[in-house]
Image (tube, rainbow, N blue to C red; front, side, top):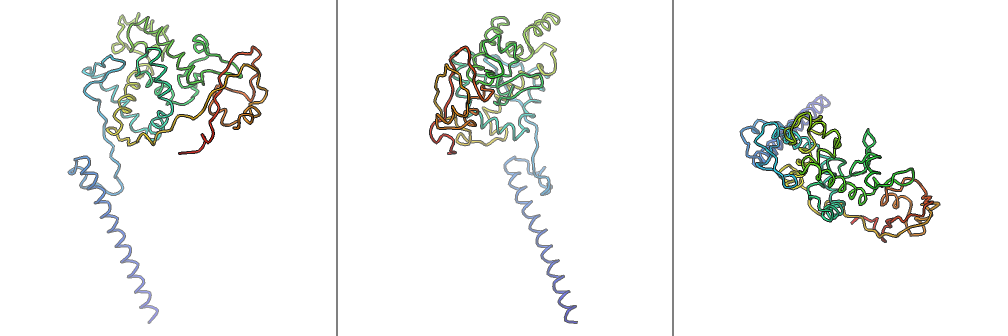
Amino acid sequence: MIMKRILVFFGCLVFALMTLTVYMNIENGKQITSILATITGRSSELSNCSNDNLQIIKIMHAPKSVFFAGEELPLSYFDVRESLERELNQITYSHSLTLLTMRLSGRYFGIIDSILKAQEIPDDFKYLCVAESNLQNAVSPAKATGFWQFLSEVGQYYGLEINDEVDERYNLEKSTLAACKYLKDSYKKYHNWSLAAASYNMGMTNLNKAIENQQTANYYDLMLNPETARYLYRISAYKIIFDNSETYGFYISENEKFNPFSCYEITVNYPINSIADFAKQHNTNYKMIRILNPWLRKSKLTNKAKKSYKIKIPTKNSRYAD
């Protein structure tokens, strides 16, 4: 009899605890929903929202006006507005990649901006680099490589050294300069930056054919391959989101962005038989030399022609996080 009463008591206790837990979860859900309703101003729509359905997904609309390199996008055209909003929504909801790219911008935008300015290329073209590679030394299925995604032949045409040991498509400074040279050539041909950007994606030859066949030299009136058709809108969407990050749900402070690498350069005009030994001679290691100089593609630099290369060396304590 005593054992039965004990079992009944514990059964009631367990039931009471379960009931309390459910109640607390419901109340917490109501509190969170209330906070979200206050923030968004959509209390009537959120009043019946459960605790399992708290992420708010809403359409990201285009601003009233958008400019790329000083040229206004014709947002009064339905196809232009819809195309831009497609990219705004895709980038906004690619949370982790967009956040990473924003953090990387703290490390690399300063370098890119200074070269664009010196070469008299509009500042907005740094977002072309973002659209191409998300500020990473990526390699595409077509073997386009680096921040600016140069194919080997085009890279070499614009002055980049590309071989087994050295690939300057991975050199941010040199590849940015090569991209500027390309964009200057393209602008001279088309006389506007929208088509210059389009040609960067599809090539001048293919763009020339499209202009000739369709009898228009307006990017927004051309029927292009799907990738190039989205290209300028994607670049513009990155610009909009980076310039108005909190509007699109990204809360990232300047001190949360990655710092530029702390390093100095030395000029080398001789062979390096072992980059690992070279690193030790400069109080660092192979890994750090490769991180700072990704254009070095092997564990040695033969350099039979005795060319001059600038190799970045990390400063003391530069590897330590702030």
